Image (cartoon, rainbow, N blue to C red; front, side):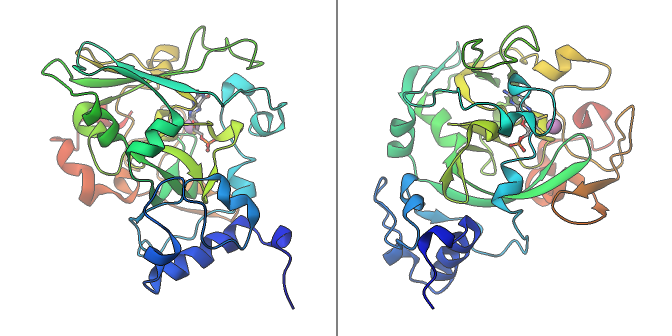
Length: 312
Ligand SMILES: Nc1nc2c(c(=O)[nH]1)N[C@H]1C(S)=C(S)[C@@H](COP(=O)(O)O)O[C@H]1N2
Ligand SMILES: [Mo]
């Protein structure tokens, strides 16, 4: 029996494409040309995303991605309301096209303004299946599509003043019902070394579908070894700067949140344990891993693993 394409879930399309890659036919099925539409046309709606030319994880992570409808309906995006369901239930008022991201700061010798198509056109689209851990002690597994943050930063030609990267997200009362919750735009930051790390992404999709309003359309940060609040959504500015940016949650509550926010089960939040996490879409809890399971890749960035400042 043929299944109608409208009945094929994004997860099925995603698994089918990964199977093709595993069989070594990915290079045929997925042209390296950006903006080439899916050769595998089993569901019409997948053509909305430029297809990935690189499959970094190559099914080797052993992680089972959370279902797309769960990823898209259990969210933190306070500009659209404070509850987990408010962001997905809010009217779709965010105008994501056209969208431009300004890249500058005193640390950039080649500042510029890029639209999403420029970013897709200039850099390979990568797929990464990453663990996602919110500071509130819940987790998911998310199959991201995006571009390496390092490549976007390289294109801005960093100079010796580029010590940190500051991210600013959309702050617009017309498009966001709760735009003013933090009194200004949502700010996040990374050190240059963190931003240049190959795990760091600017994501534009999940399961080969463009990001939804509630997941931070059209472009958001992904840093899988850090707590979720670092993943600034709907980014409009990226600045290479000399001073450590004062990120929104640090400003909101400096006793509970800092700059680094690396995942560590041994350092509790002042009000709850970080030792375990509730897995969204499954029953029960699992142990939280140091650097969210990415210690081999990132521990070298932090010389003292007993220094609490790296973990809040
Ligand atoms: N602009 C903006 N970005 C944001 C937030 C927010 O409220 N506003 N919430 C953060 C928090 S606390 C988390 S856990 C993640 C949640 O991402 P998700 O809803 O896609 O899972 O987004 C982060 N990025
Ligand atoms: Mo979070």
